[in-house]
Amino acid sequence: MNQDSTKISLTNRSKVVSNKKMTFMERFYLPAIFKGMMITFSHFFKKEVTIQYPEVKRPFSDIYRGLHVLKLDDDGRERCTACGLCALSCPAEAITMVAAERTEDEKDLYREEKYAKTYEINMLRCIFCGDCESACPKEAIFLTDRLVPSEYKRAKFVYGKDMLVEKKDARVDISKRQTPEVLAFKNDKSKSHNK
Ligand code: SF4
Ligand code: SF4
Image (cartoon, rainbow, N blue to C red; front, side):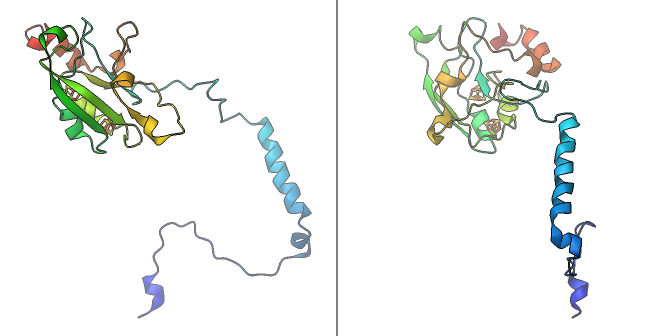
């Protein structure tokens, strides 16, 4: 079999390596170093492409998907009913939850009769695809424009309810992520869970 016929060219950028002898100037190296320095110095006069993060932050796209938030309803009760659809739809298997039944005394804490006693997202597994948000029938989980901070220990990337549930006095704005369809649904008072 002709070996040339098995060659596959993936791009047209390949270059044949040359073994030609170096000229005197090439062996001298200084011209090449000078040329390299000129390229370096020329960058001093070009527009910077880097920013001084975290002092300077670039504005995020409206559809940026970052750290999740578990939302409370208008009365400050957790919206999540531990149905598990977010965990089922998660392609990275990043969500773990344990469901529990709400007691009479807990009606002010949880909107539905069932709630997530434990809700964890492993941020190292998460690929921020937003499928959990799309799957949630209770508008309980949203991705936000917040970043997951860096940590030294892997265990610290497993976020529990203490990190995910929004605080009553520090609500997280997710209005940019609500589609017109969702807003129309929320305004439909005939839907029982919007009452
Ligand atoms: S954003 Fe995607 S990968 Fe991350 S928890 Fe949600 S469904 Fe899973
Ligand atoms: S966040 Fe939504 S989809 Fe996930 S368990 Fe709670 S109610 Fe169900």
